Length: 520
Image (cartoon, rainbow, N blue to C red; front, top):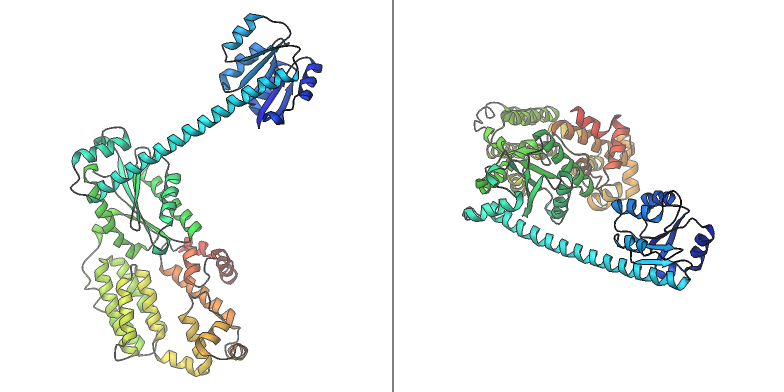
């Protein structure tokens, strides 16, 4: 419906026209009435009607003055003028403002309806034309963006691309000579390969958060979103803050992490090599963790002298494990992890050491390395962060048949001790429950297991599981830098419900996981 404003200083004419015209059948709605030009101008400014039917001769502000003032700000309004006498000069002046309908009073319903119909047809045609033009613009924009993205991919991946094509690309994105541009490359690595479809959403998110003036080009290559940004009007600190906003928003929406790599000021003639350097720099997340922001230059500072590690640490852990001092062994492991973090060794060296440590722990627990251990070693080779190595090695210590483990067997019956082992092995499993343990692990009656567990441990099975999960969460927060709440929830069996996890965490510890992360 198009909005209509009716203006006349004669009340009878105002009410008469408003009542005799079937506005709705003409595709219009009478949205307002005014007794003079001043009232009409105020209404136009507040409500922006599509059509105005106005008398010409009115006190204060007549019809011609009203259209003069309104047309400056609202040139798209259609007008119908009413007059009690036929004066050509009024009609001639009104035509200058595009007024096609100049009706003499008194005029009947048919005359006004016919004039309205013509204006509605004009408005419909304009709307269709506008939509058509917008569609053409959208299609043209998509074609331009598609061509730009293809060129960007070539610039990044083809080291032998002709110089003229590179220059053409940069002229397209900057409108100026690329030699004077101030540019950086950003790379976002999607850590959950099962959510590849969300990379397109990440692309839209970065465009929204960084802004069209900052984002010059973007493309997706495998699990990576690569963006070329202009930093002419933005500081490095503010760019990092915007990247963090993208990571946090994406994590909250899709429960998945984006690890970011940011380049220094790039030599635009060498974008291909800058891109390769950034992909190589992803190994720095071995220390910084997934979901972090990595500077492309950090790779240069990784060390290669691992002799300090081999002097004491591995032996200390093994001695404590053989003595049955599991807690002490875990403390020594924690110190070793921190030493590796401090040394900032190249990830390949650190991984080699940690895999050797795993093999030694496995030999303490079992003299021969079986198929289970071989599978675990293969998993270790694929780990990408130091914190994930810490988790696996700690689990290996817990699984060990140490004296401490034997003491636990003496403290509890064999059934309850096995239940506790199952709990520790399945903290990340969202299905972990008394019923699940009874059905999937022990094949025993649920009620019997629940009563036996409560009798020997002194607490309900569900409470014990929750407490162990929160203890593990605290431990992870203390060990891992910038760990996300949603990631903790997922890793500790709370699935996609980080809010519930936070509530339980606060109830048990007195603070939220976010508070503890910030304090760590």
